[in-house]
Image (tube, rainbow over all chains, first blue to last red; front, side, top):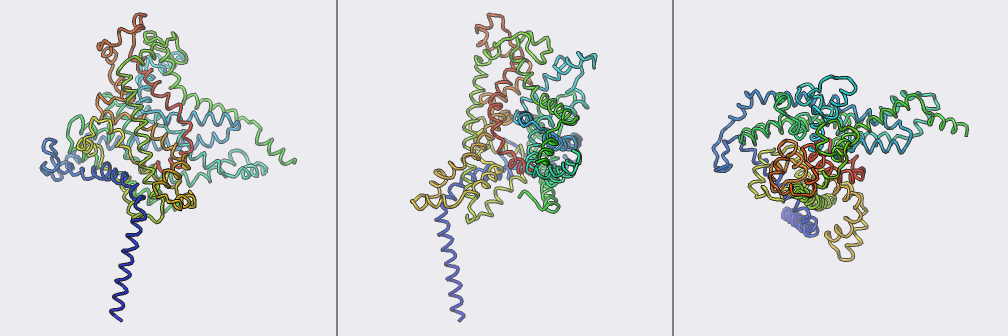
Length: 318
Length: 304
């Protein structure tokens, strides 16, 4: 009995192994097709994770990562005491929160207003125009802004012409206006693209609901607040939660291109600071420590956001 | 019947709100389109005349010399060709690698499927960051090598998820018919899956192309002067007021016929012209990308 049982187990294990090999053989082409992706992930994504080790070493490019001496937590202590780093964290958080406060509602309002447009061709034209800026590069947008906002640029010319100002204003060289430019250019570039998802949700609403509401004498405002807004709510909640996870990642390209010496106290966000330390000062170890701080905080926020989203709406991305 | 008429009447009636709303929409459209228009007008205006300032809605002194100059200047042409090369090669290679991975992952019975899924997702949560990635690129010999533009973006988890969803919806009978005729998974993928998934494959290819075309920071980090792209050139012009003098000192351009006519390039006009050349391809393709939007945004918003 015992022996028979053992034999049966062995046979089962053998059979399992056998089916595994058979499955492996039958899927050999499927697995083969994954090889480039697997190698890419290993080299481009996972290998740099190992490279984080230089944050704990005194990295010397001449002798390589492995031979460089250990530094322990030296760079993290430096980080904790670094005045510029504190400023960078403050800038990143302040600007991200402002971007969220200004930039998040705009696509929703725009989608609702656009949905109320009755002429179909006009509606489509406005929509197509609205998401065009999303596809222009920041190099283009920053180039434009620098010309547009210069002393003799179109904005100052127009404002002087209409008698609103007497002398040209500086925009990028003034702290408050710089932040305003950052916020508005961000909204400009993203609102149309951001509204597409809300429009898709609104379009999925059964038109009969609106018709019934009209017959019952509902005003436009009542239709929006009792039909459109409640339908949008789940999407709004998910996107809001998810966008909160992005607050430690300021838009590097935008800041990198629009920053200038006059406003550096406000323009230096964490990832710009990482670049400065690493590539302008050549301090790779310290730069990596700064970068590690940022990617750890963003990971924590992402995990939190996903968990909150799962709990409140039952939906999570992964 | 009467009810229908009433409904139509209510739906089509223009109220004050409609006029105000239309006004807002016209303004929004103006604000989104104006920058491109303004730059276009500057690029069509005589450079010396532009220096006076105040080109807002229309050119003052029309000329096509800015574009003639642009397409005769060797460094611009070189940058343009690098941009085109990376857009085409980089965009295509990424679609292929990602689609192959996505196809295998779309099979429910794939061995180690869960492990592969985790393997693919983890890098979304944590990355090595700027400096370790830079050191890696240097150590594998891609620094100042054209293929850095291709290799860096060979695979995309977002695109992979979008394609996986699409592939899952393809009926299994289609594949079985090929397999009965003696084809393997590779034949199925290239002969059946890719052709019938053309809508999603084409959209992702276009998205990759737009991304590749618009990138400039990788040129600054890894490319160097030899691999200058159009967008990186734009950044260079933006940060370097002396660019025109540099161009003139190279001497290769001052012999052009338009210079004898008194043409004198300025930073503003060179910049505006480069901007227009960089934006034209985008304007041509972006309206075709709409299909991808909804899915892409849901997944993409996670990354912020």
